[in-house]
Image 1 (tube, rainbow, N blue to C red):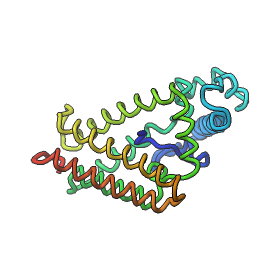
Image 2: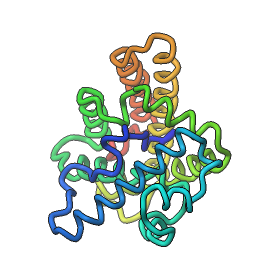
Image 3: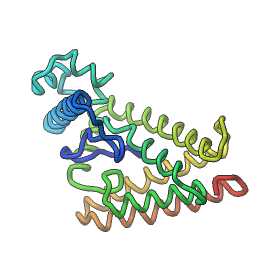
Amino acid sequence: MNKLATPSTQASRGRPAAGTAPTGLRERKKLATRVMISNTATLLFTERGFDSVTVDEVAAAANVSKMTVFNYFARKEDLLFDRDDDVQLLVRDALKHRRRRAPLAMLQLLAHELLDKQYRLATVTPDVLRFWAVVAASPALRARTRELNETLERDLARLLAESVGSRTVDPIARLIAAVLLGAWRVAFRAAMRGYKKAASAAASRQLVRDLFDRGFVAARAAARGSAYV
């Protein structure tokens, strides 16, 4: 995202999140096929533009049928945005193991860990800039980005509510989700602009950290008096 689900490099696209790797041969083969199709599509989109490449061309380049492509990806846009579940898995796992930490404190700790590990959601690289250039050039991808942002916000609010034992999403959880995801989008966009000028991954990560921490300050103010702080 945004996209709080920023792109991976081609080497890491399509890999499962930590702790979710398939163990059976059938599952591993399916994952390998998905990764191969996604990487092939990403290369074509980067070279020629998303709107100039058809699904038929992706299938031909990946040496699979068009039906096989759609067996793995419901829509063409998802060939590029193939990691939207990754954020939800990371957040769910962090909140599940927060112990005595407040939900917001746990999410901030997770954000810092991802930055320290140079996780793809928090690091600007030339591959990331090329990815977003492809997105910016395509109305369909820009629209899909907005849809994914809405989905991430809804899912984050639900996970926050569940973390404090609520079966329904309350307005405070929705507000926190909107503040945090908005802060992440602002931070990452600023980092990309800074990277274009200075070409420093370390500086861009620090900018993300500084701005996103300000987002947590705002989220804590919004959540004052609730179980989320």
